[in-house]
Length: 172
Image 1: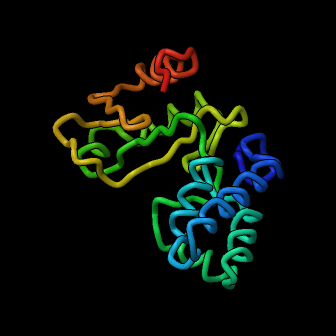
Image 2: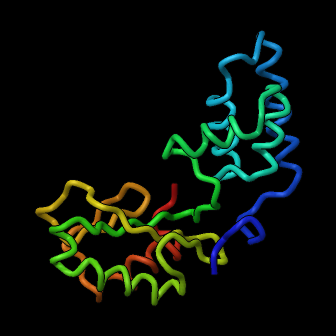
């Protein structure tokens, strides 16, 4: 049930053309030296993640080894080489949340979504992750969906949280 590179979250080759055109635009303004991170940010904005074919294209266009591009992507936690869902659900597993039942909350999300932590649903709507601490210990257990914090979450709340997003109640 993951949205790995062969799943429906993946973009076709038309997106590779889009990032290639973006690099052309940047090149018109002068040298591409020092533009790697700018290009990677734009590519991730377009795709939601950084597919391997895009990293290879970027490396070629910037005349650098693919390993250097991979090194930058793997160094910065902002970048992801795995597709993400439209809604990213993060269950806090810090000490306060864990002792308040966050493990059961995570299991409930996994059950409702049919995925494990770190995976994306086939419809590309949800990615579910577990985090170490979000700094809202007084509200434990905590769940964060696309930056919106839910405190004192109970197992009974999980279905409603998912359905609110699935139903489009939270439009970006």
